[in-house]
Image (cartoon, rainbow, N blue to C red; front, side, top):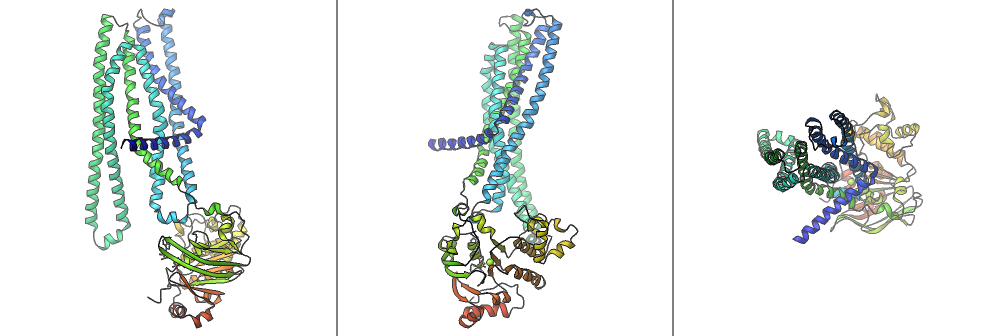
Length: 611
Ligand SMILES: Nc1ncnc2c1ncn2[C@@H]1O[C@H](COP(=O)(O)OP(=O)(O)O)[C@@H](O)[C@H]1O
Ligand SMILES: [Mg+2]
């Protein structure tokens, strides 16, 4: 148990060190901010000395006055004090700026640095990661956990550095004004600290429970509005409203508990703090009247001022310590992302991919997404340069997966894919993917302008090339008819366009590349007959002169194919031209008859004829 605790603490210290390393990276700014903070707190405490000298040297003209021993007159001292007060005021103002703005700047800078780093790292994760990881979870790591990183940074360098400085300066000031009263105060000081720390822990626990309450309420809202159709259908509005009220009540009670303990803690501190006052006032005042402690009225007033400044740092430190315990969990989750390995394909190959010159071979390729659930088994076939290879088979058989293997999104568990004799993983990934164009089933556009969507990922594309690509994709006339033309922003996922328009924009995106291999995955399956025709035209233009792998659902594509690969239950059942397969393969004949000849709409997908 003890060992575990030590280990845990060690891990936390490691996390803190890691956060510090980001801060240290910006060391000039860091030093400046810390300097501002320290100066600000020292000046605030130094200001209490002004009241001492005002009282002793100027107003009371006491024999023990400090400056008068040097022969200054009361008025001279008053003038000096006013000047000092003005200078302190100016520096307090300047350092306040550093303390507030530069401090926030540094924290935000480091948080953004970490965020950028993690984001960059995430993009290189293997596809499997994104299948497993829910997008919601990733987003929450990016928002909530990053928030925790930010707060931890604030605690780690703001509070952990600054508060001890303030505390020590305040204590030193107390000692300077009266060491006897200081000893008295330092004895009663823990009486305030101990309950303070205890309360801090309790508040912290309750705050966490309140936080859980908040997320329960938001989850409930998400669920309800996501399923609003079901709720309306079942006329469950009142029921849902009651459920929500119950959850919200629960949250309310938890939130009030936090408020209550916070208010309690505050009043107790005030109480103890204020009870210290009569004690110090009594003892100090008594000795000033009777003499004996070498205490002046100015000392007493300044002393009381300095003790008041001792409490805040302790309160902040205990808050920072408790908070850090919780927020480090978020920091850990963020850094966990950075620890995950990148997709090895990014670093595997180093040969520049020149394009497919002679042929591509699949040799005994096996693949599975999850252990023990094979998707593709022993796939072997050959494609010559310039050929059109069509994959047909029931839905779920693994056609899209095959294309992903070619694209190196996933990697065979066994077997090899070779291009012109070279295993594809030996090619440098960037140069390899550059030479492959993909038009998928579900065209994905980004919430950017049409121009950026076509030029996607490339900066130096000429306007005329974009227009040429759009013309080849049968979409130029449409784009030109839009009021903002190529600058039109298409809405999230391209919602402002029809399926056919979106698809033609992704085709234009493909045209722009100097690719050698084309992958088409049921590119027209979700379109109506009319837009299918225009898309198909564009696709045929695109296929010319390139080796094409196509997941086919259209008769014409199949008839044009140089070779059809028939897949069933993850295996290659037969391969050959349409005519030969019609003669020799019953499975294919059935598929063909079900799907391609009898069905009037080409958009229904193939189903397993055996089922
Ligand atoms: N990301 C994934 N994780 C786990 N299983 C998957 C994933 N993608 C597809 N599959 C499964 O792999 C099989 C093949 O899918 P897919 O290649 O999309 O088939 P097709 O394109 O022929 O319809 C299906 O059973 C599907 O459920
Ligand atoms: Mg598919």
